[in-house]
Length: 206
Length: 381
Image (cartoon, rainbow over all chains, first blue to last red; front, top):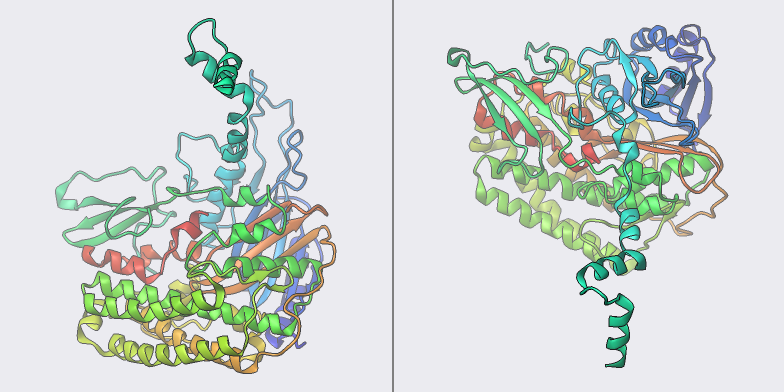
């Protein structure tokens, strides 16, 4: 399998220019077709503001960003963001772990008031705009220095991160179809002194 | 660079400012439900006379939370889910998703399956591109051309139904390969019908390139310069219609594409007309690609043996009909993804509408929107 020369050149360029700004080396993998993938793990979110201009100078193209919870533990929510770039067919993923606000930073209801923060890269990559607005509202992440931090998909009246609280319709339907709920509905409709069991018995005898 | 005030850098927070001075123009709401839109999207268009000066886009009307659903399904169930992100590029989603799983687990797809995957992609591309250029004819009032292109597209729908058993969702892909196969009879049926389609598409291409009515409504309309195309990082026929030779099938070799001969189609006009011509020429390239797949289809298995899927991260990309599609998969050693994210091509192209619509006429707004071949169900997913 031949690795494309353009991707090899891109790899050499990134190896030369990015590790200092990132404060970390790039690790490399390949797929079955010989395509090259670079991976950088940053120590902290502020480092991204140093790396972004260096990446822009390399003429990387931002493909997308992925915000996620690395642990998926509801009791201990975490946040990280993976930034995916392209350079001549090479794919570079830069992962930024975010610091969660301390649990004692809470209001009178016990809700944590702070948000994990990450600097905006929209000043260097214009198409970061929609991506950053999307994870602001879907993952409740604060983006500092964003030129236009308004909602993308969700209405202003909804809380950021509300989609994480959604219960799938199938789960709700499971609850609605229990025998207990059915009997309570039927009981409410029946004359006083009659039970669902009585009616069922009569129907069975008939 | 355009001075259009639409884009988020210049947009006031909330975007609710409406100028009430009639001398300064007025704001025209288009959508979210509008006869010219097939899916809901809200455009606030600020006009002076009949000239568009500012566009603000509000999305989110059909957001379905599919990425959240993907985290409640196992790796096999997500093939079915991703096929339903969108109808016109429904094959590209499970195709790219399966490649992400394969990249993560180091699965090598058999040669025959690679060709069958490319064949399915190109069949969908022909039908998708023909649909878009048909809608262009519909918008400019060229009804006979619209009907003719849709009639030709119907041959592609028949091909899909015959080969895959479905007119839209082909269910062609599985992790490690494909779950369909073709025999000599099906290949004969396929190539015979491609002969019919090719003859028509060549004729349709000449109409779009030369007809005075088509040219009168589309040449010089919705201009996106190569510099703007790079700045906004647009993809697919929108980028190639601005002269940028970007195509994931060439840049990131996958499936059978490294073995197939095809050109990356570009047009220099940077306008609605150029984007339509790119799609029609690409449809002809795709016909050639399907023929090559049918001619060179190797024997052997159609699916690889699957290992246990380890914890890890992987990225996969493909060239969907609207441009680059990227999937990011993160697993934790269970059969349910820790994160599955996809970015569709339309997501990259919406923002550039602000540049394309600068100083255009109100009557050209639907035409310019259609020229990015927007997919709202993809964008909002």
